[in-house]
Amino acid sequence: MVTPQAEGDQGTTIKECVDAFLKHLEVHSPDEPKTVQRYRSVLDHFVRLLGRLRFVGAVQRKHIDEFKSARAGDKQGRRSGGQVTPATVNFEVSTLRTFLNCLIRELVRELGVRMANPCERFKPIRDASKAANRRPTTYNPEELEHPVAPVAASTAPSHRAQSRGELRPEPHGWV
Image (cartoon, rainbow, N blue to C red):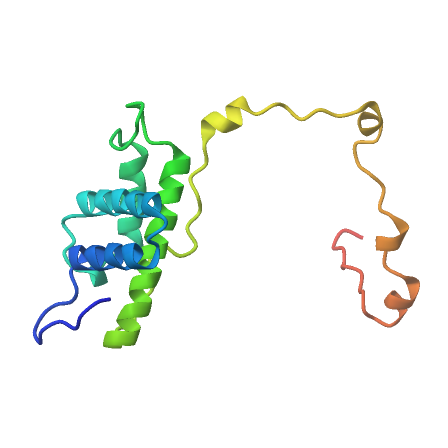
């Protein structure tokens, strides 16, 4: 997918990687043209917003944070002309994670380059509008009478487990 660079070159450019990944998708997912189209759109936003980075090895976690922030306030790519939703940004970050995972596999296999994925373990953006529109929790009369359910006998530790020293009581400083 990625070809080795000439000696003295600083690495593989982001544009080359995006083109190679999209070609890979077209070959391996010919029956999913909408997926290819959506990935192309996400990667175009990535190149547009992080265009100052030339090489894929320069992409760091802070750049992905910048991408998320820029896309969260962006109006580009939304059909209705409003702001991009948190769900869209979360999808785009997962798409970038897929792109970078594929790229990292290829770089390791073809070039022996080791690179960590800057999109790994990203916390999704929460949607405040969904939380505001969520129905409040309702309780039945029985739950209101007993707000804290008693511990079931089967989950309580046995006397035998305590006597074997498996469960030691926590020391209390105030006793």
